[in-house]
Length: 71
Image 1 (cartoon, rainbow, N blue to C red):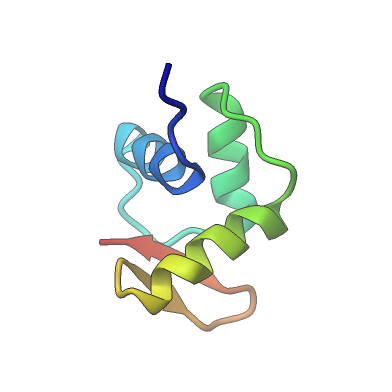
Image 2 (cartoon, rainbow, N blue to C red; image 1 turned 90 degrees about the vertical axis):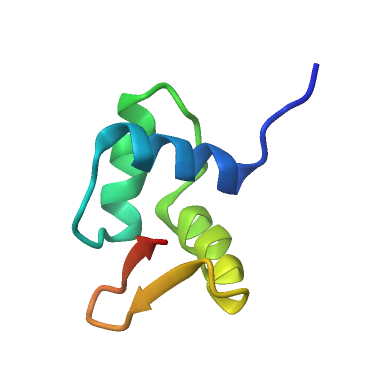
């Protein structure tokens, strides 16, 4: 059985939820939990998304707190 990676799980939940506005890592964590996906913390979500931002797959809005938009 192939286990989906963390980024794929995040992206899938964001697509399913229809989120149109950029979300904070905490808001994304709450969505993940609502959809039965387990993550250690909002910090872990931010780490995963930050790595993908370097590759251009995620927009990071550097407000306080940071917000993330999946392209």
